[in-house]
Every structure is written in C-alpha cells, then in structure tokens.
Image (cartoon, rainbow, N blue to C red):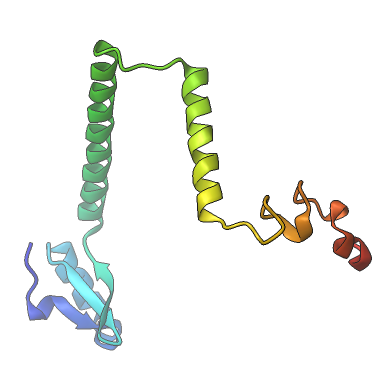
Length: 132
C-alpha cells in the first residue's frame, strides 16, 4: 500500500481529529502519525491489525517448516551429531568467542576483578575490606 501526504498526520492534528481519523482507518485507510517530524505510530483498523498478526504467525510457521526440511536433509545426508557432542561443541565455541571478545586484564588471565578466579567477591581482598 502506498501512502499519500494525507495519510501522514502530525500528532497535534491527530489529537484534534482522532474521531475522523479513526473513521477513515475503519474504512480502510492507514494513517501515519508523526511527532517532531518523525514517524511515531500508525492508526489502522483493528481487523487489519489482526490480519497482519496472522500473516506474521504464518510466516514464522513457514520458516519453521523450512528449518525442519533442512534438518531432515542433514539427517538424510548423514550430517548428524550425538546430542551430547553437539552441546559440547556449542559450549566450546561460546567459551572461545567469549574469551576473544573480552580482553583479560594484565596479570589477570581470567579477566575477573582483582584476579579473583571465581569472580566471587568473597575471594577479593578489596571487596572484603568494603564488606562485600
């Protein structure tokens, strides 16, 4: 659907003409309400909004079906892993990427505060002095 200049309404004007705009939306028009010159909200018929939500759910279902088909193709091609091995690989990748994305402090290879290997304030002498 294309919008015309009449479909874009400043917020102050929309407040003054809300009943009229609501009638237009009920008749099928879609209004873009702006605030400070930027798109802010849309005014559309409730049935059309429900229709948009149904379309989105259908799209999600189609994506899930496509994922299932790819999974079945992987099984047919023998591209499978035991669950425990797959979980282990995922955990290793996450650990590796976490180490790469958070640089360790000098003299603190674990990257924990005050060299505390467990990240536990009880093991941190500075935290003990503060009472934490």
